[in-house]
Amino acid sequence: MLAGIDMDHLAATGLGLALGLLVGIERGWSLREIPPGARFAGIRTFALIGLAGGLAGALYRHAQGPATVLLAGAVLVVVIGYYRVIQTRGLPSGTSAIVALLTLAVGFLAGSGEKLLATAIAVAMVILLSMRQQLHRWVSRLTETELHSIARFALIAMVVLPLLPDRGFGPYDAWNPRQLWLLVVLVSGFSFAGYFASRMLGPSRGVVATAAAGAMVSSTAVTAAMATRMKQGEGAPSIAAAAIAAASVVMMLRVIVLVGVLAPFALTSLALLLLPGILLSAGATAWFWRSQPARPEETGEVALRNPFDLGPALVLTGLVMILAVIARWVLAEYGDRGVAVVLAISGTVDVDSAIITMGNLPAGTIEPTTAGIVLALPVILNTLFKSAIGASLAGWGHAREAALPLLASALAIIAAVLLAIF
Image 1 (cartoon, rainbow, N blue to C red):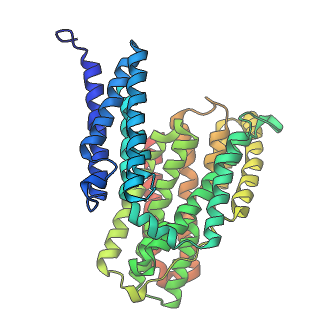
Image 2 (cartoon, one colour):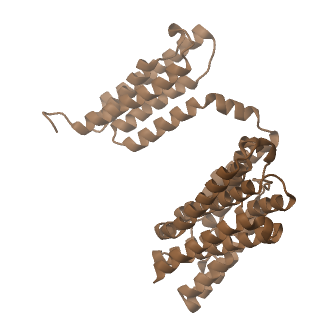
Image 3 (cartoon, one colour):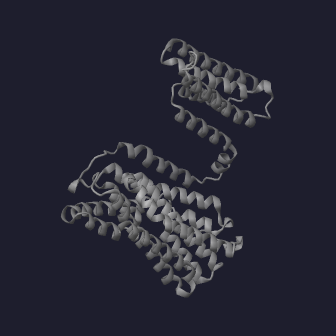
């Protein structure tokens, strides 16, 4: 408090004004070709709407009446302004009116003390508004199949998932329906992102970028595809090697993200253990990329499975259910070391199953450092497995450039694990 002024309320109200100004700048730029008299609102109007929301939020706790009147008045002004624009221009686009109401709400949140939430909403709104042209182009390129696939993904992620019970069922209470279905959502979501990233980038951007997008679905599949390219002599070997190394980086970063979501207690330990492998693989990617840059005529898309095919996700979920029961049984009979063996073996081909199994273990079962080491083992085995795939499909002579960085990455993670143990 300074001379009777509540500095927190002052700062919160000022944030409402600043966020309104931010939205107003975007709206002013987007509508710059419309004559001033025909605009719904300009920079100053949006700034004032944010200020009104901020004042209402600051007043609401101690003076709900005046705050409510201020909010209602601001809403009325927005409605009248929108009606006037419709009468003048005959274009009933509601974007600016909705943005004005959201700006008022953002200001209210800021004035109420929810500063981070208000800022996040305002920034997200400005980003969405600024992407108008890109979004329209993207929608115009969607196929009917892709539109149906997006709807199916929304169904499994936004409708089915919240309805599932969040408690243990089955033997040893090893099956949590919501966590198991979350795996389906995550796998489908990674496939979704990988599919559209590959589609938007296209072969002209280089096989490295496409492989990195494909690694969000399966880095093992990317490695096999690149090894096949090497064997058949399609493009420069160094580009295929860079693609395999990039896919390995994406795989390890993806593992860290999944652990952060599903088994956060192991996140710090695992991230430190994987860091040497990430740096080595990233360095190999840069080395191979700079040694012989990709050319458009040498590039091609990595073949990805249908990102909205639930079959692979459901198969993986079934495997996780089996492994969850085995892990609980091994834990009961042999303790932490038995669980480590189960997770390491199960993660050789697919690391996700090991992460989900770890996340389904009862809280406090494994100490965080031990959990990080346990989850590092399937990453090591998976990396060695991909090295073997490359060598077997392309032959050592062709795949040496790709296999050696994978081996070095696995050895670096092994060294980090040994240091953590001893």
